[in-house]
Structures are given as structure tokens and as C-alpha cells.
Image 1 (cartoon, one colour):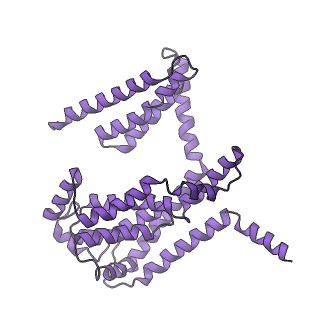
Image 2: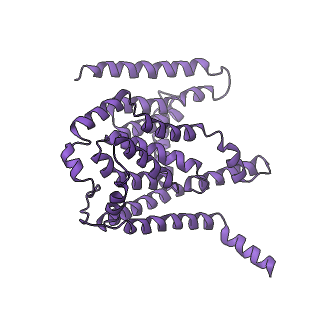
Image 3: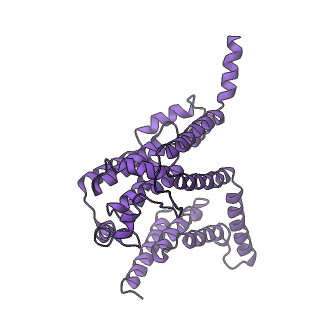
Length: 334
């Protein structure tokens, strides 16, 4: 056991207990459902604490889901076998509902084709062509990080697609200039969701506008989903500040905490688990396990990626009722 492990466990237990005690203390007394109100904090705090301790996200989330399902039934009668059975049944219902969710199934159907497209682009030399073009402008660690952030901003149509495409495309470049994989992952993640959350046209905004429209109808607010989205756009502090932080951080080149350790290791030994020589050698090669050709053209990547953007915009237009509105306008003109 490492020397810091007992300290980490002690800190996690203390924080978990303190948060639960604070939630129970501030919960209103005498109100129906007050116990459920403070107990609702247990699953998320448990998931974060276990992830901090075990470094296993799937295990932590699974235990938190199990705890949440049991709390819905067991808390009222902890000694009742029937309550425990209902609790496990609730867990199964939650998991089953998630697996049957239309939006979740659409996400699962969307991501694998993106991976397939990335593999085909690599095999055709498309990424190699883009990398060779970018290397004309990227001259060091700072410009490599700025280029990665810019690619994340340009790939605005979907956060999942942005993370997959930008990460696969920029990994050889950041490896060449000894930017740590941790820094690459941070830049990719910090530009994918925030950019998709600000873009006027994105899969994220399309879903959000639909929710805002439903809420407006339920509350009898005579506003469209898009108008509510634009009203709230200036209050998206996380998205705005995170994007600004990415570029400011790259320009200043100041790291701290675990990221500073990762960057110092990358400068000394090279990024990833391999050495710097391997990273430099793959700067214009494959990054996803596919053998890339020795030569490539950027058009082999730009055409599929452009088609992906056009496909998304067309899909958003169709899902938003575009054909029906077009038919309605045509009938009025006739």
C-alpha cells in the first residue's frame, strides 16, 4: 500500500460523512419527503468518493446507482426483506429504463460510425495530410496547444464527435512537441462540451431547445425554445470561461498541480507510455492503431468531415420540422 493511500481514504470518508451530515442538518424538519431530500445527496457524493479512491469510474457509478435504488425503498423500512427486494427491483428498473431510452440508444448508434469514419480517414491518409499542413504552422508546445483548442472550436456540431475527431487528429502533433496526453485530453474535453453548448447549431442545442420549448409550453410562456436559449446564452459562464481559460493557459504556459507533473514528465521522457523517440516517429502516422500510408491528402479527411457537418445540419433541420414548414410555405404561395 502506498504511503498516501490511507490519507486518501481518510479524506474521502471524512468529506463523505461531512457532506451527508450537513445535508441532514439543513434538511427541513416535519415536511413530507424531507428524509429523501437529504438522502438524495448520497449517490452522487458516493460516486465521486469511490472514483477518487478506486480510480475506477464504472465501478463507482455502479455502486452509486445501486445505493440510489436501495435508498428509494430501504430507508423507510431497513429491516424489511420486502423493502430490500423492492430496492433491488428499483435498481433494475432504473438501469432498464436507461438502456431503453431513445436518446441513449441514439447516442450509442451515433458514436460507433464516428469511430469507423476516423479509422477510414486514417487509413486513407486524410489525417496525415492535415497533420502535415498543420505542422507548417505549429512550431512548438504553445502553438500545438493553441491549434488543438482551435480545432475543438471548429468542430462545433457535436461534443462526442469533437472529442473523437480532435483527439485522434491532434495526438500525433502534441506527441511530437512533447505535450502530455493529460494536457491533450483536458484541451479536447474542455473545448468539446463548452463549444457545443454555445454553438447555435449543434446536436446539444437541438436537444436543449426542445426541452426549453416543452417547459415554455407547460409554464404558458409565449416564447420559443430558441428565444429562451438566446436569453440564457450570456449566463453560460462555465462554457465561456473554460474556452477563454484554454487559450489563456496555452499562451501563458503555466501549469500547476498534477498537470504540471504530467507536463514535466512529458518534456523529460515523452508523452504516453512510450518514449519521446516513438512519439516523434508517429507524428505523421496513425494514432488509433490503423496503419496510415506514407503519403496522404487533407481532402481525404475534409470531405468526410464536411459531409458529417452537412449531415448533422440536415438532420437538425428535419428533426425540427423543416420539411413540414417548407410544405406549408409552398401551399401558402400556391
